[in-house]
Image 1 (tube, rainbow, N blue to C red):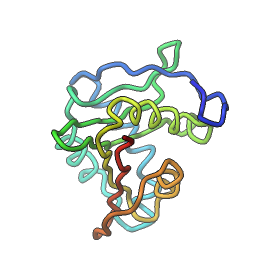
Image 2 (cartoon, rainbow, N blue to C red):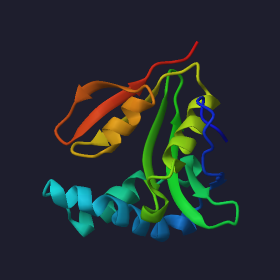
Image 3 (cartoon, rainbow, N blue to C red):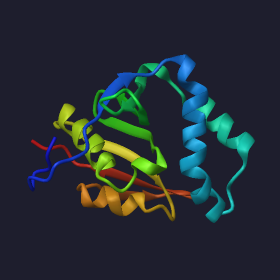
Image 4 (cartoon, rainbow, N blue to C red):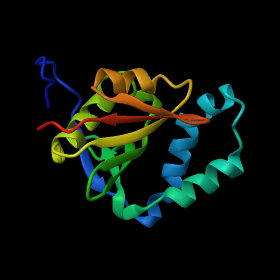
Length: 154
């Protein structure tokens, strides 16, 4: 995959998640979220497990794999009648910073580009700037998150 600017992006594939993936995806979420949650004084392992358990829906969750099958991350995409919602985008720390997140989001953005795409970003996270570069705009400030939306591409 290449960007609109012609840059190559890391190859990956989506695979459906299963209930059996919960523990490894929980571990991934801990390794990616813990530093950010500690920075805002919200790190609690039991709370992280409970939140992940409550939000984990295998039917909407995709594994992000390298061509060799190695797990690179995961993302949840929920389809609604009037919008799509992205949540729980977690990438292995060693896979971050090389364009994989951009490649994943561009693929998701192309799937149903006639609908707005919504997500929430933890305050203090670098993710807000990442999503802004993709065209997302901040639509609301919440206690711990920013709500963002990518308008539909007609």
